Image 1 (tube, rainbow, N blue to C red):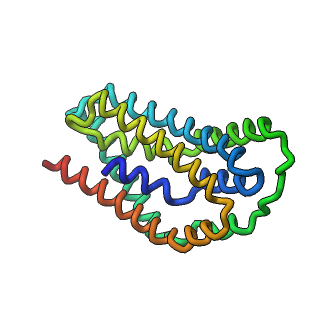
Image 2 (spheres, rainbow, N blue to C red):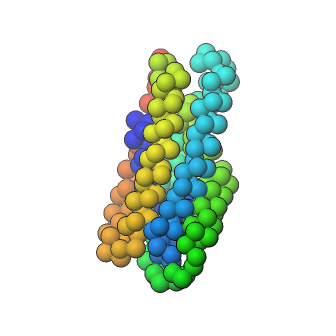
Image 3 (cartoon, rainbow, N blue to C red):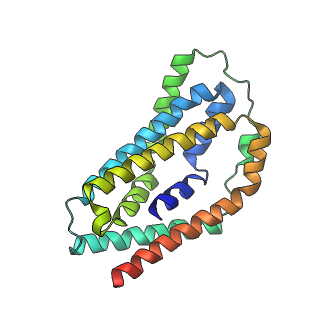
Length: 208
């Protein structure tokens, strides 16, 4: 459920999505791949920090219980937010971008700038830190071992990078983008429902 909730949350466009979209539409997917790598690197920093930070907390400690409750509350908040504002992400603004702007830019320089912008976009977004800390608190019992944390860390980093690269490659296709815009409200509702179910499930588990 943690892996599924993380992936579904990626489907809902945020600042990172629009950064990738604009880079892909203006400079092509190869330049946009720099933004993808920068965003994934920023996510990786938060993933490592969240998982490593919890290693010092005992499952029975008061601080761990408080952290779990805060994490559940944040996931519930995100879930309600996704459902409440489904279909209002403003994806239509991306559809009108000029796909031929800045194609004459020096490729490596443009790629490096995109990577820097992607990393800053990800690392300066406080929601990323809260989201990964919330997911990390869900790992309890045998799933809180070093091996499982490494597995989830690698999984989440890889999914962020691969999904963003897929978005960058497909975003220039107007037909695909228009279809995505049509199903986006339902994707956001499903994402919200998954986050709420995950939070409720952990709360029920804690009560036992």
